[in-house]
Image (cartoon, rainbow, N blue to C red; front, side):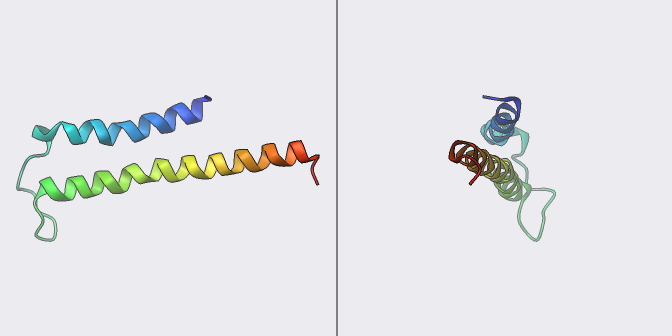
Amino acid sequence: MNRIQVLLILLLLIPGVVNFATPIYNYKNPALAGLPFFYWFQILALALSTLPYIAYTILEDKRSRLSAAIQDGGN
């Protein structure tokens, strides 16, 4: 694994670890659009944890296309 892959894996692990630390965000206030902090924090963590996954998927797709082009001889 290269440095970028390790960094992306760590970025994926951070929201997972934080979600298990419920006392950190187990509050009603501040509310956002009527949702207590407890709920919108989890929604935000889910949304943010998908970004590194998308970046990883894009990088892997580019890497596999590049290696296929190299093996194919550039044709």
